[in-house]
Amino acid sequence: MAIARPVRVLGLAAIFMWCFFIWQIFSPSVPYSRSDSTVYERDPNLDPTGEPEGMLMRASDEYAPGVKNSARINATLLALVRNEELKGMLSAMEDLERTWNHKFNYPWTFFNDVPFTEEFKQKTQAVTKAECRYELIPKEHWETPLWINKDLYEESVKFLAEQDVQYADKISYHQMCRWNSGMFYKHPALADMTYYWRVEPNVHFFCDVDYDVFRYMQDNNKTYGFTINLYDSPASIPSLWPETLKFIAEHPEYVHENNAMDWLTDKVRRPKHNKKANGYSTCHFWSNFEIADMRFWRSKAYEEYFDHLDRAGGFFYERWGDAPVHSVALGLFEDASRIHWFRDIGYQHIPFFNCPNSRKCKGCVTGRLTDGEAFLHKEDCRPNWFKYVGMG
Ligand SMILES: Nc1nc2c(ncn2[C@@H]2O[C@H](COP(=O)(O)OP(=O)(O)O)[C@@H](O)[C@H]2O)c(=O)[nH]1
Ligand SMILES: [Mg+2]
Image (tube, rainbow, N blue to C red; front, side, top):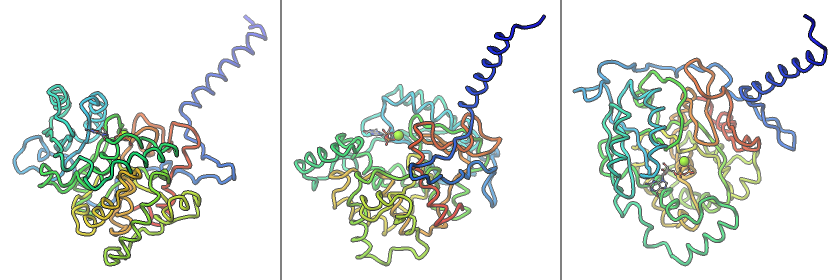
């Protein structure tokens, strides 16, 4: 039976619309092009990604939960979280347990500025075979230090809010950034721990990881691992770089000869950011994901640097984040070859992704940096890291 022409046309149009719809959802992101017609580099996550080079420790009976003389090293999954974020925490845990930790059973350590509820403890322990520890942050690690002037803080907050600095008026956010910058690794519960993997509620993990990442850090002499590398809001850190320059003028001996200064001071890519941040590119490792060696934070160089920053007051009078503080310290005081891009760990914290091209990954779009607005592509600072340091 012949189909009437209008019906055929309608049918074809419907098929076309359907294909377009599918393409919109599943297509890899197109390089974002700025108004000055700079097209961003091809995302290296589009290239096939395997495991990192070197000897990797695989799962075995020696990683069973509670086993004596286990193959685990002194390391923990670590989360600062509120009781109210239980649901988001469970979701992040389920992802990380499914893709990695059910094979290695590293303990989870949860931190909070108020005691965890029984419900929080029971429900988090129920999604892992590994040990869970619940720790209260001592007041002296969390509270605003005495040298912060309340009136000056209030005035500063108004000024920051006028410049649209996010969370500027939330004192707990300032406290959280300070704790993540210079306090967490001093908690007595971490005294025997060397490595940690920081996890936030509501993040996602997409790829099966089949080796012990903490052993990878140890065996390959890595200090810090990241997935995403971004620009920061210059208005939140105007005096961070000037304070840093003061510190390194007093302590030139702490600056490593193989540092990442060029990445920290680049002004080619986003000159306005560099200018507003008084010489700092604002490039930083996005610290909601961190796999790192606490011996770096416990070193004399970092301790003195943190104390210098803490006394300068920018955690409160500005809104210094732990991400730029950690990143500036790593970029200056650490050998850049000891900083590792975990390109094989598929990760999301809204609104950014690290999504590699690998059959081990499910649930994210290969090479897509963001599912938010196109302008967010300009926040990507990975090209600078690759340019000045490399992909190691
Ligand atoms: N216990 C506790 N955790 C906090 C507090 N503020 C932030 N956090 C945690 O710190 C991390 C970062 O906070 P988040 O709100 O995600 O900040 P964002 O990622 O910068 O938007 C998350 O793991 C939060 O659960 C707080 O006042 N108390
Ligand atoms: Mg967060």
